[in-house]
Image (cartoon, rainbow, N blue to C red; front, side, top):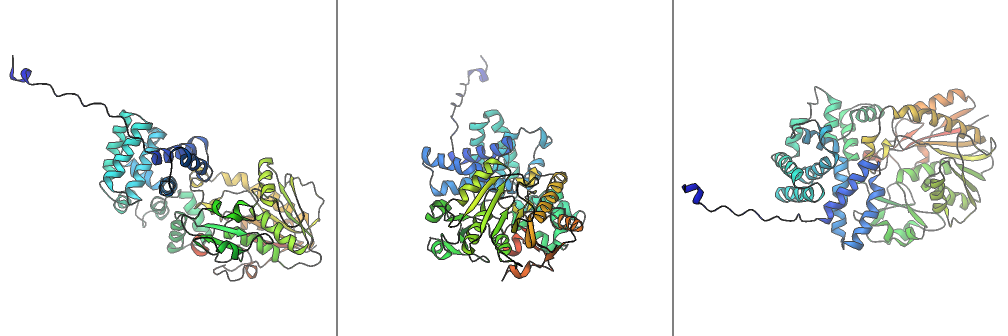
Length: 472
């Protein structure tokens, strides 16, 4: 018998069950819902967290980590895709989406958080073992070990083209936005490297939770008594919650007397409500009212003046959300399901009209980071005709001397000034009003007469507002 054959065999390693990590499993489930069902993280995550609190005993720190993993991964997806692509031996499109989600979660822990390297890799590999199996977990381990060899700045130097050679592609990779979105935002800003970099960075920051005190039902002073609450920057009804503030814990929010509403959205409603009118001021319209934030504020302001708001929404389920938001309003109002391009009301019925039109949502990428990866330039072709039709309806619905607010949560010029300019060519009996004086105290509003708000300048979503008076 040979020497080698006499050696005792090493015992096989006992099989070790993968360790389940509820936080990372939840984050993975949220990313899969976003990818598979085109869901939005801000809608998927809250019920998952509620279930985890009940089933797994999630504490606040667990929820905070899960939230950071989901939103951080989605915001930086473009950057992480470029890094992962440099570490695999095949095109990313050939990597199974669930595997790519685990790799992206791991990349975010390695490059975008303070989680120690060994913990980020081991936790991600354990997650892969649980949700993908041992075989693919080995692939995940190999890729993440390559990523761990450098930090984010080091990787960006490798995978992003130099700014001088391709500015848009450089910004797209470094700041994790599709190239066409970078180009569109840059055009809207009017050029300059500093401004576009500040905007793209602001898009990747976690937005504050902003509350609105609905007039006649709650006050900002009441909301400021909540822990970690500070005044809004611009709106007298706005209150901001510090990081970790939970809106559902605020009694006024639970009771519907206050709501969650970006301050830019509040400013649009306030500007319309305060625009000077010739003649009566008793009948207001919100022509695209879902999901109801602006409608609730407008209805409360109308009630203070003895006016009535009609809130119209095409989609029945969204009309239900509007009705819920307006329930308990101190004055009369009405919610109807109606197509704004085929209005059931007579022309010239209203004194004030808000038309906050459907759009690409490029102004709210802080809140819905996945939207940047779903939208395509061709989406503008479908939104454009609808936006023009709705603005025409608004101008026909307002009486002579009345005011229309055209609003959109997108700064894309094709959805803002181009729409207003095209429609006003057909309506010589309408004129633009300078909207800037109706946003008192708000700085950096440009040359007017319309207004474009920006995350990096105003701390709001990138809301656009044009005020138009019908003159004949």
